Image (tube, rainbow, N blue to C red; front, side):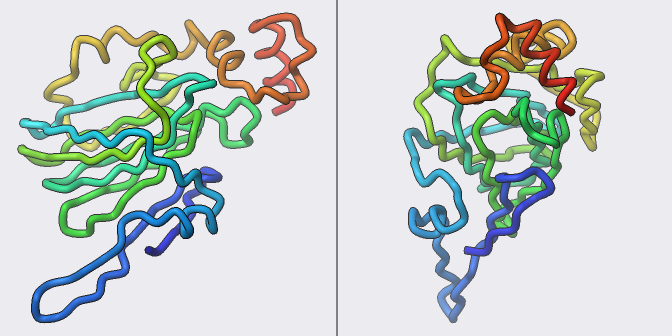
Amino acid sequence: MIFVETTLKGAFIVDLERRQDARGYFARVFCQNEFNAHGLKPVIAQANIASNLKKGTVRGMHFQFPPAAETKLVRCTRGAIIDIIVDLRPESTTFLQCVRVELTEDTQRALYVPERFAHGYQTLCDNTDISYQVGEFYKPEVEGGLMYNDPRLALHWPLPVSIVSEKDQTFPLFDRIESELIWKMRLPASIFDQTTGPEQFASATRREK
């Protein structure tokens, strides 16, 4: 596998190293040793697939709060998508910045999404399938999300949005939950843990930046 770190620390594009012959090709898509060597979490707790019928479908922006924050290894197995991730780590110098990656069935490129990132994508054609390998079990009690069209995130979707689930349309705007989100996403050993609550923690975090 070929690992290329994006502009968001810890988020990697993972390309195949194909061994081709007259039959086709063989390639490894996951290896604990290689993930460890690049500082990535080599745990797969669950593996999921999503089928999308219509071009322009948007799913996102999804995440889980600690202590059940999840990594994701996302791959398009049929069709094509634009995959977008947003850094929600309060201590990060790239907090709220995003990366967009095109994933297609032809390249079989994958995107490794670290813990404490929001994730979403838009399908670029009809009948698009996605594979997720997730590093934590799904826990609805710590599930979170942000609106795909949140002006604070300023995400660019390449196509008119055709379908968004009712659930994804009920996610709050970042500005409404900023202090709560920053508080819940903090590192356990954060230097700001001496603050008395979400508002103080969020204020201290903004001052540090």
